Length: 165
Image (cartoon, rainbow, N blue to C red):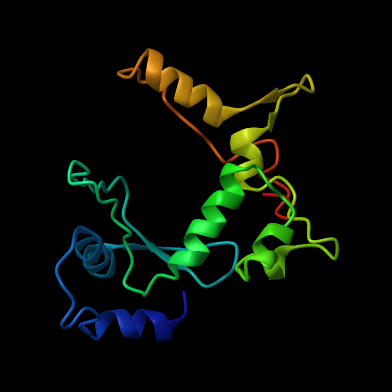
């Protein structure tokens, strides 16, 4: 990690001055104070805390968006629809003026097997496909207390190839 980043970490800058106190902001403060420096594939380095959990009461009907930045809601909703439909071609996003994936798309606007593809059409080793979303919705209805209610967007077969994972 560069000395510049280490120096900024030691300056005790209040990055959250005036911000409301939230679990996410508390986690960021904890990472800045106690995080362990680690290297990463980009060479920028990271600070890491192992195993931290945040819990939120969802009974009030609100789902927290944990960030310190303003949220482009139209983009978030459009991207979610894109993923839920299992799309890999960004035409839908472009048609809706959402450009978050533009730089990763090919000339044909293809992203490859991104999150929604994995959720909707996880390709198995025998060439079949699993619709994880449909399966987990069915399981929630049939066995709502199951510990196997899981959807994954990380197909480990693809992880070594950064162009498709």
